[in-house]
Figure 1 (cartoon, each protein chain N blue to C red):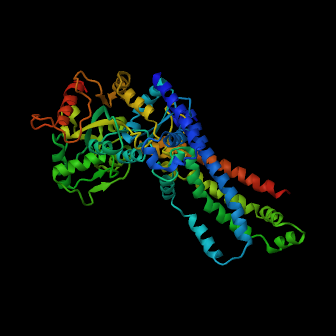
Figure 2 (tube, each protein chain N blue to C red):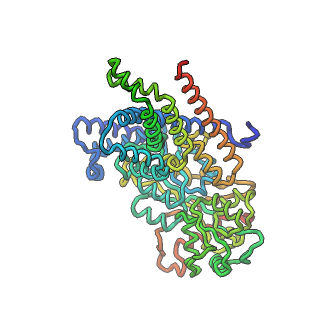
Figure 3 (tube, rainbow over the protein chains, first blue to last red):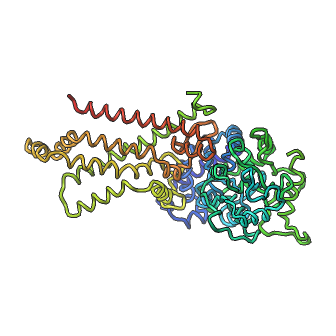
Length: 349
Length: 228
């Protein structure tokens, strides 16, 4: 475990720095400038203090992971984290929030790593607070509604069209309204559909995916859900899929990719960067990827791993709106989505 | 028991209950240590603005717990003034927020208990040559019934709240089923989120039993304190 040895060395160095810093009375602890400019004693002291608060030195340490309710409520993390904990002797403290809140927690340096699903927001996070994003897995969103389908959108091939019909029929639609990845996606579909949702039929729950699905089920409403959470709760819901996602020949706009992003230690010196990178490495390793692939709830696979591929250019970070010259009308990211949908989805999924 | 909890791990329930008890007991204990002397000081003295102070304390009983949680989060966050302590998303942060929630309750109720002690008892203790500390002890002994009630009320407020511990604690449980910052109340919100209402109710029942137990200890303390 070279990572652990390195970490211990770093902590020893930081500890020495802290002692020197105290002895010299540099008072650098509170001096942001000094920390940022790489002053060994000031920065070291700050780092050690925070790490002592959060993790026991000498053991594997603790990793604070801010993630979305969808990875948490589906039980996927309960599958993955014990494997990581065993391999690295570290404890994972998983906080499940909406993607927006998880990104905010990461931006404040209150988490070491985030696992979220909102590409545009992730790109923004990467510009300032995050480093080394990796694609981890994907599934898709589905539009779900009551079995009697009052708006008559069942089987529609286009998500935007279905949303347009729901708006026209004024069928009750529940929005997460919580700045989560799903909420972000939902709003972008409304925008694409050219509809400004308003009125009594459009209601924000302000709650997680599970809550919102429960409400939709109880009240006979439509909502947008990630397939993972929907499948994992399906047995308790009176809802059916009205519009399929790209995993089942639905529109590409409903693709739902997840990424893992460590928080940049240059911005927040207190974060446990080594362990965060180890976690990202674990999720994207053959071991982590096969665990994701083999994770099923009631016989359905919820997430499709996509960190490994034979394509040599695969999995690289592609910035927002980046398009290689001569790529035609498709951006590189769109090509990547098509690649995932075509090559990584089992035929019988 | 196993039947009620279904596939819920007993170990998980116990460890969640322990976190609940630990956080609330620590918060209420610290809060009592801080509140009682202040309640005595205010109860004994007469000063201008005493009414205003009492009003502020009474208003504190109505603090919305999520707002308290949010303020504590801002203070403890890395971007906040006490970020370097690394307290956010630990049980300590939860103790701090519950301390803030329980203190006005304990202070306010014990203040009225202290004020309810007959002036003659105070005078008698003073006349018998007691120092102000002795007088304080006599008053506390006289007011014990109300003070125990104050502590129980504070405890009820702390252990049953969910808003602030969810915000500052993060509802963390480890993968092996041990709770870190997950209390019974936040565990119930998690179950409700996933539509597992029966499990949520079962956890709620455990919480109720705990509160009942704490109150039983409280009334035992009241009776025993009576000495007769």
